[in-house]
Image (cartoon, rainbow, N blue to C red):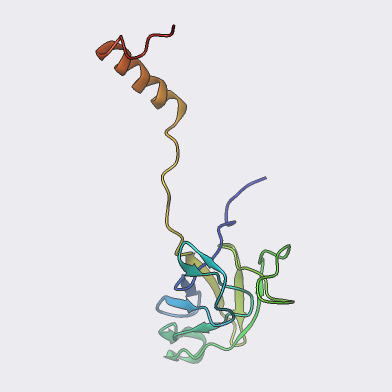
Length: 138
């Protein structure tokens, strides 16, 4: 199963509307107690954005998003009550004017993982050649 788009979304996530001219940040207002990496977790109840610049569907008038329901959220978990599911990187929401808002940056911090196996073996070999007594297997 692919993990693409499975990252949870946090407060301040950068989003874009395909009919707007500027990105905007999602503001979490639905709950104040579930955090991930020090940021509030966004839910399907969160629909607060600053305007996405101007709207191409409204003759380039200022964007005033009127959003419907989030799609592709993490439906197996409820965050702040019924019908309040965490948003995922792949989640989208439609605007009544015809635009679709998607998530560009979830605001999760990347954590370093373990190095790839060939790199680990390369480091071990380098240490063995420099300090053979440290890596003796007795």
